[in-house]
Amino acid sequence: MLFTIDVGNSHTVTGLFDGDKLVGQWRLKSDRERPDDELAIRYHSLFSMAKIDKKDIHGVILASVVPSLETAWISCINTYFSDFLKQPLFVVSSKSIASRISVKIDRPEEVGADRLVNAVAAWERYKKNLIIIDFGTAITFDCVSSQCEYLGGTILPGIAISLDALASRTAKLPKIDISKAPATVIGKNTVEAMESGILNGYGALIDGLSDRIQAELCPNDEDIKIIATGGMAHLIAPYSKRIEEVDTMLTLWGLHSLFYTC
Image (cartoon, rainbow, N blue to C red; front, side, top):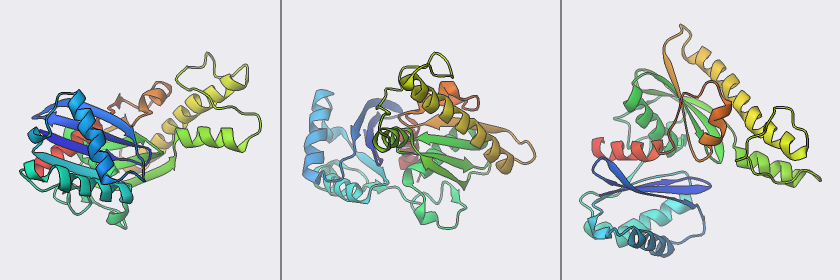
């Protein structure tokens, strides 16, 4: 089995693959203070509940945007999994996947590992011009050419950041649950107005920015695919006219592909 690990700023998403089948998936908060021993204990419990023996895990691949947790995970894997691995731990970076995608930005080392993994996964699936929108702590737009070139993108505050800012920086605006769809765009009370502002507002933002990016990426009206991933993608997708597909497991599938082809 292959253990895939995607360490984000807010959450760590892990998956277990048996060949080409995703047989286990977990999403936990990313605690920057969590030591390697605690990581081992937590996943030992998760594996036990899923009736998975760690001795069956023969490969591990890690993508991280949190340096302290990356260090903890590397130590955890080397201490508790290395005896069973057929290959050394694969840590994703722009250098480690250079054979799979050409990174055409000023400082390739600065791009988040998860963004490159998503780019590889999406291009392998569609092999065309792509805009990949990842709804995480930040919302990132990543642009990939039909020649499998990572061209850069945009970064803006994520939905949770905006909600926290509204609640903490204003005297009368409460925290809200945006899983409930507003009945109308024009809110009839404060909560409805906030729900509409976040859902319809981000949907309009996604569409407007997608239009501008597409005009620059495909000036001759070349074919393009726009897909979304990340924990909150499913909340915003219904309010966007440009998002064509949502795949919340895109990063895990990208890690799976990279492990076997790099």
